[in-house]
Image (cartoon, rainbow, N blue to C red; front, side, top):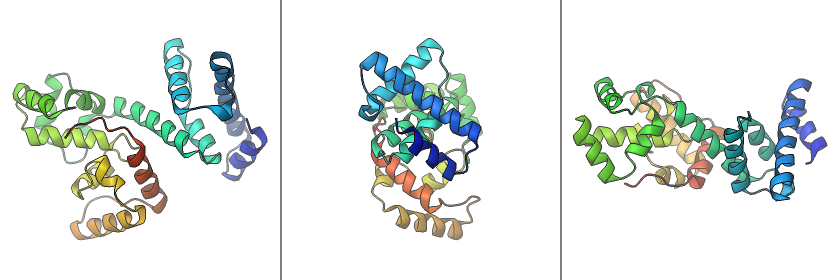
Length: 229
């Protein structure tokens, strides 16, 4: 691990001495785990190693902070592991995200799905993975098929950190309702389109900043396609 380089980077970003040491300890722990379990150096880590580490932590009850790896791989300019880290953060996020919190959803539809045991974005993604799944769920719950698809798309968008309760709705309403559609855009052109959409429609929310837009497009290109349309 490039300890001194990472330390200098964290200091430049305004982190306190306590937070710097916290970040270093957590990256070192991953490094030690890699060495013990895979005989690998930190520099040789792959996305699968990070995912295995998260699974190991879950099984053993070990607390890890994925935002630490977000910072580390930003510093290392390792796009693959940066994206892998944010994929894992997104997985954690959709487990907690509630359908009722997405802007503009029909509360009656949310309640009907709740009666079927579907409350979170993660549950919505599992229940509505394919068109056949969505059709069955629509019949069972009484929720129209187009509303089922809307909730699936909002849930899928929320896998990208930053596209949460309100921002996911902005992207959806602006026509950026799938990963493939977002991935096609140049990030700055997408941001300008969103700015114009907000101004034209009076949407109660803000468009992405340049760095947020770049991050969103990067993640949309990387994330596995888990929904069949």
